[in-house]
Image 1: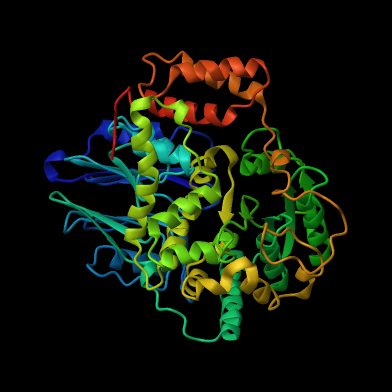
Image 2: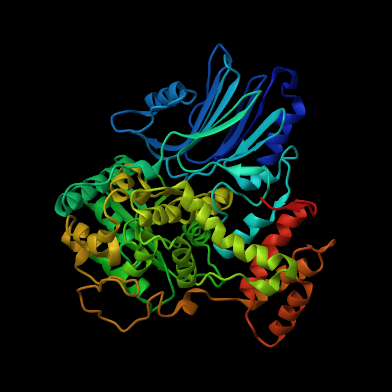
Length: 573
């Protein structure tokens, strides 16, 4: 993993000074990594800390042009040098030719001749890139924590974005918790010079041509693309590390890895006696994987990646020998939403195809159980927040017009929920030190997945056909099934709870853990104007009688922290 930060002077009269460069280095003092580096000119300064070679070598030519690539960029038949040359040549063009790239990466290029800074992220925006532009400076980083530590970055709380974080779990579109800090959208390029800031796209998912072939050919093509996604990320390694749940996505990753000759060291985190634990163990035996099962650490929303790192460093995972790249782990993020249409059915699709878009959004919100904790906020903000949640989704749908209106909503999920899933984990890389392979987010795989009829994917129907293209061992033992989806054809050997049957087993709330956060909120001076102090005092009282309001404390603490960093300033954008 790499944490990169940079600043660029937009015009010659505002050349970088020594304290600008020092601010970058101080902002990176957030945890140990393997290596660190810096490079700069009079106009652009870059600094980074990295793990396991996740930052490429910077390229500084004799004209003063400077480039840096971090993350993983794949292009079949091309190596790192060729990929960097492609980005350097195309980043500043009016119509960059980057259609055949894949991976998750960030890229910065400063062209000295035109005095133009270009910033790019990958096609799905899996690797975030945060940007703040002032009249004479551009500040950017792939870590929001680092942006928060930069004195030159204006931090004014965006109440709309913070409300979305509490409601959906993430801000929508390019919003961040701060009004003037934005995150690049999937496939977006930002070009900045002394006169203007221009945003455009080198890749648009809603313009994919619809698949016109038959279903059988589609299944074969998807299997080939997934194997290629695994091959690119495996990169010939003999022994690899992977999470393995009781479901299908991580199982299919392990299956493809085993097919390609890798030994797989698999790890599962789940409560004892659940389907997750039982079925993952059976799958590991069937596929011939090394396997370790570890219990979840108590907490309302367990951070699996921190737990994974702690277990790995503590010797709790039996690897059976050295792993080629021990900091890299394969994860099944994205499969169920991108491929399994986990939240979809004919009723939801009909809302969008019949033009009842707002009703469809409200229906989906109800289905997901998303709620605004209205009593947490002062009364004058509640109605505005409530309406903004629906309107925010509608705004996003207008950004992704598709031939099939239901596909627009699918893209809303992929471009918001799914691509934001790993953003907090990248941000905490200096703590857990793990990097992630996400083959279900491979651009070539998604190109096919997001071009086929959405109806084919309902209830994991197409997914089951696709599984038949791989080693039968993957289908030889049972797997967890989403409620209402196509059942597993194998009999369940145990009457064990799934993660949906007994979610309380997975969210092991520790009321003592939120005593201190609640105290921090209530004692903040000045108290956040948007929060309802009376309600939070009620929450404190109810805790005495054993009630669990951890969900409200989580939201209040997050808002309070952003409020403090914003010095009590907030706006709506």
